[in-house]
Image (cartoon, rainbow, N blue to C red; front, side):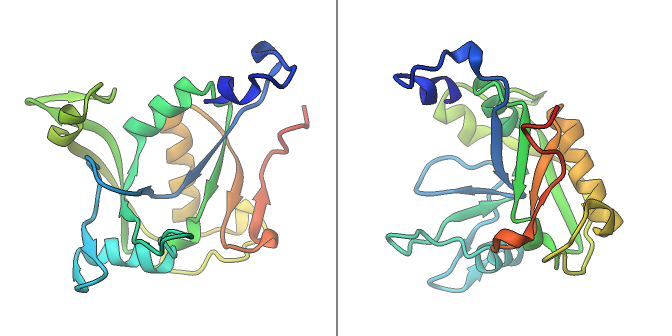
Amino acid sequence: TSGGAVTGSGVGVTDIDYVVGIVKAYTTRVGGGPFPTELIYDVSTDEGDEIGKTLGTVGCEFGATTGRQRRCGWLDMVTLNRSFNLNAVTGICLTKLDVLDSLDSIKICIAYELNGVEVTTPPYDAQGYADAKPVYIEMPGWNTSTIGTSSFDSLPIEAQNYIRKVEELSGLPIDILSTGPDRDETLILKHPFDE
């Protein structure tokens, strides 16, 4: 957590006035366990969800040490909003937007259905997560490269709409945007130290 990060640093928790949450434009998970928005694809058999395959392949979603395939899925705002709240996040760095470039449509999980009830807060136990069914909104994709985009306004309108929707659903600004792996493919939309 952001509070844990300052422990022993000599800086008090209340002295931190900007906490950036670094988030991929889709969700990944390493290892087992529940993953409501997972798009199941097995790289060893080349079987499963084609979008899951695209996210994993284009996003290079393999463990740096083990080479193990990461599990990929749609952006999960239920889990993200819990993380943002627990860490007192004040701004977002959205990475890997370019991984979505080839998709015709893009889904965002906005709630879970649990026991026939729609909830926007995550369950507190693994079984609740295992039983959760994602509730999605669907947005049009942009089918064009965003890699190396020089400004927010030069992004395809559909990509801009996706970014604005994440801001709306989180209640937080996206201050930094990554459209590729290189340093010069990062857009600073609002510098965190400028008032």
